[in-house]
Length: 84
Image 1: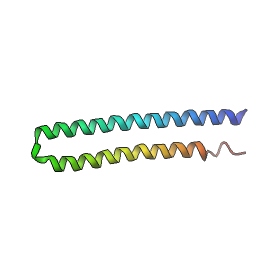
Image 2: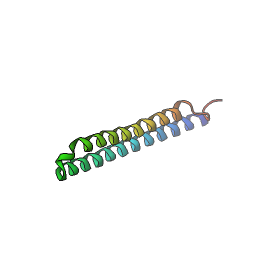
Image 3: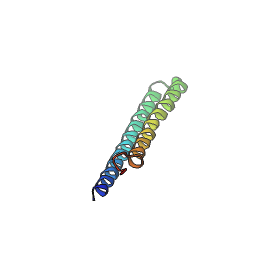
Image 4: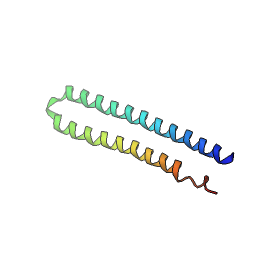
């Protein structure tokens, strides 16, 4: 019974972590993209520099989401509290 409660708690935690990571990445990507479009309308001649910075920023934001997913899966499958 105790093991089932720990498994359920780990699954709920993983769901929360992955959900918040996805929402955070979506919000971050949308903010970066909106600022790129805003900067592009203000200074069209700086398109290449803005686009490069946008791609780097979006890549780093998505990397944080992937890292959160990996940590969540480690928490689910390599949980030391579940071994007996």
